[in-house]
Length: 77
Image (cartoon, rainbow, N blue to C red; front, side):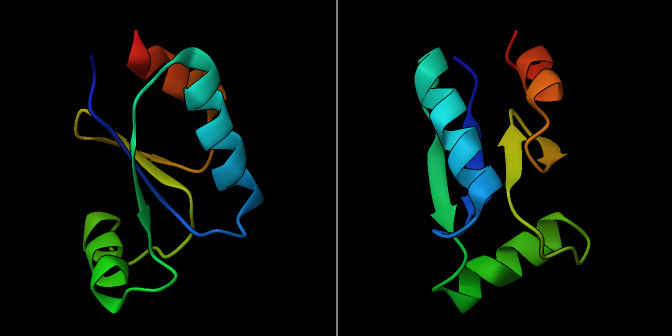
């Protein structure tokens, strides 16, 4: 199984859609809430070269910005 990490916030609609998508597909994921942690926000900024938008999804080391359903499905194959 591929390692999936999602950087998100509790109020982000696209984050919720992405997490629902993973649950529907039976994909396990680690969720990192950047809203309450300066350390996690810094981690996100380093990962994305300064971009702070969410969701940011990492699938086996490949970074996906936003909820790109088709791109995510390709990476999960």
